[in-house]
Image 1 (cartoon, rainbow, N blue to C red):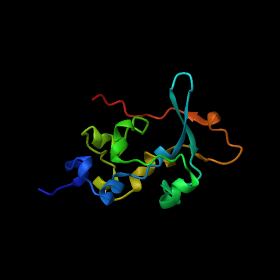
Image 2 (image 1 turned 45 degrees about the horizontal axis):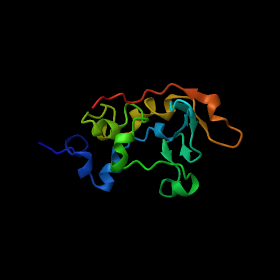
Image 3 (image 1 turned 180 degrees about the vertical axis):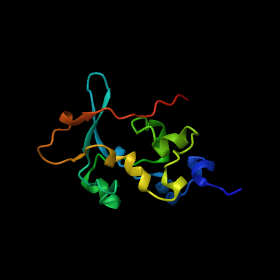
Length: 148
C-alpha cells in the first residue's frame, strides 16, 4: 500500500511542502469577502485580490503577499478550525474534517487542468483596484457546512 499523505496523514503531521501542495490553486480564497457589521454574516464577492493571477489561480507574489496585502490570511494548522469561509472543495477544510479530496484535485489526478472548472476561471472575476466597489460584485459561493 502506498502512503498518500494528502489522504492518510492528519494535517498536523504534514511538512511545509505537503501543506502547500494541498492547495489546488483554485484561488477562491483570494476573493474579497465582506462582513455585515450588524449580523456578522459573510458575503463573498467576485473581486479578487490585487495580487491574484486569474489565469493560473495563484498569487503573483506569494512570498511577499503580506507586504502588499496586509489583510491576507495565512492558512495554517493553528487556524484551520476557523476556515468555514473557504469553498466547499477546499482541501484544508476537507482534510481537517477527515474527508477525502475531490477526485479532480491535482494530488489525485497529477495535473491542475480540472481546477479551472472549480475555481476562479469558472466565474467572471474582476481584480481589486481603485474605484472597484466589492459590494457591487457579491456572489453566492458554496462554503463548507461540515458538522463536527
